[in-house]
Length: 310
Image (cartoon, rainbow, N blue to C red):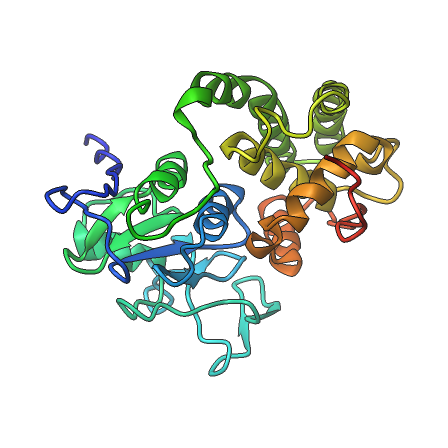
């Protein structure tokens, strides 16, 4: 059976477009536990689209998406209303706070899986982020990179913003940064989160810090990865680095706090608006759920101290 093609369409500032920009028409589904979903959320917030594009936030720990069907073992992202359901019990028997979650006020579904099946019942991964068109009742995109870019460029006729995350004149350099230093750090984060033993997790961190040392040297000479302002390369890097910070243990030989330029860079990004795409409790739960052999002792960086950059 062939795998369904991914949803990967763009919103355009053109009334004749398949998905034209329009206030209140689109809705973003994320979880703070996922770095890729948080990249999309960061773009929405940095571009000032909070009142243009709606938002739902799933629990940071996957739950059964068909809890009443013993034969269906799928685990995925679920939505709850914190006011109605302040805690929820996972399949592991633990109780999880729902604070910080936002229910689905558009389709009123309980799971991300239901969103996908509302459009097409064919089996497929049920991932976030999801960008939803409320008029056509379909998925615009499930690709984090595509959503990040369409939120950056698709609403320029609706909201004026000085933020340009993927400016045309820097696209070649941004692509190069994404494929090199950003990919190096992100790949090592994912290897740690897929570790099956503490030893594997520690080995992944050794390789991670090799990349972080190079990053620290780079940031000694530049405020951001590309150009003079924040770009999508910084958004991507930020959400990988903070998860490495969270996933560290006190006894680790090296810490992000050992790298002054990286610390200042993270503080800078956090304080100019990326903090709105972070929920530390959800990030910690996401790390520990993804990799049970890791105890998330972080973050160790103080993100609110003055960054003294620029």
